[in-house]
Length: 462
Image 1 (cartoon, one colour):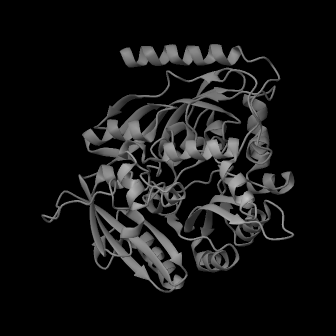
Image 2 (cartoon, rainbow, N blue to C red):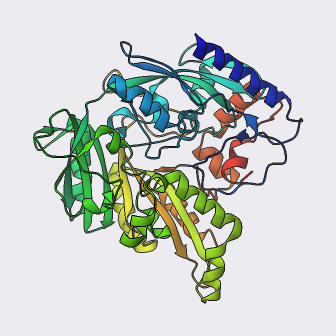
């Protein structure tokens, strides 16, 4: 009862802070962390007060559900569910991603080949709309249109204050097999087999992702939840060892479920190398509590603001660099083509591979479509994640590589997430991201268009 009363007070404070934003001024959340990579114009008004919306309201072990506030991080959510032997159906890779952020901005992880995307585990959600009202949206009922359009709306239709989500049972450990492939078609054939059968070489598969170091060296990591350690001590990649490097030297591995969920966070996949955090000497003196994604993200924001590294590169005569930070979903039958094109054209490595299929809660054919991120139900995809920068070639412009990636993804029938730079014109953007549906829902729930539009957020960086 105390938690619900505190929640009601937090929602009331949120609404007061929303009412205090002058008409015509941009509306932003006042939050300390962000996992966005696109720069935005500086706010000129106070952000919305979401300080009281950061917790778990309750876990129903019998029903396998949790009521969670919108700004609760997955780190805190997992801390609340694991003691019950439960976890969210999909836990995005980074600790400080919020549940509301993953639902309105999409998320993915190694259970996505069977559980889809985070919003597909939502049973209902309370949303502060652009009209300043709180509505409860469910798959059916008077606000089903908002429920369907909320995923990938990026806060342009409202902000989730409470979400009820499904949970899944887990065990204490995850046993892993790191399977190497020297042909990309063999890799995609294996993904198709595991997705269809949820097994590989006669053993069950509960989680699946992978890494491509080159078109001739790629790995699928196939895992199953277990309580049996086989008397093998679990690995620890929060210290000197670095997780992604282990794929090349281990065929089998074991992690606690908690460490497995955050295996990518310690080194921000492999991006911590940019800060020297993978150098053995630096790593020994870099406090473990600071080896986490939100710390690295703050360092990136400082670089965006002060451009120290860019000035040093210029002083050394190095070319300007283009940020290439993207996650794209490619149909499985075109994934090998994309990976070869990417290796040849962009040349960044490693890249992350995360198979995806929209969730089918009641068996084959039961998946639903989501209009603002229209992946096809019943079709297998692979999320390809790549995060870094490339030199800007002579005569080229900043953004040319990202534009080429956008064209290739579209030609292959894929989609890309919108947490980073996007360069689409409005006509193409509306075609790819459900513009007609978005406008209809926008006009109903934000008739004065107080909340920044989806295109303005994703492309115009407002």
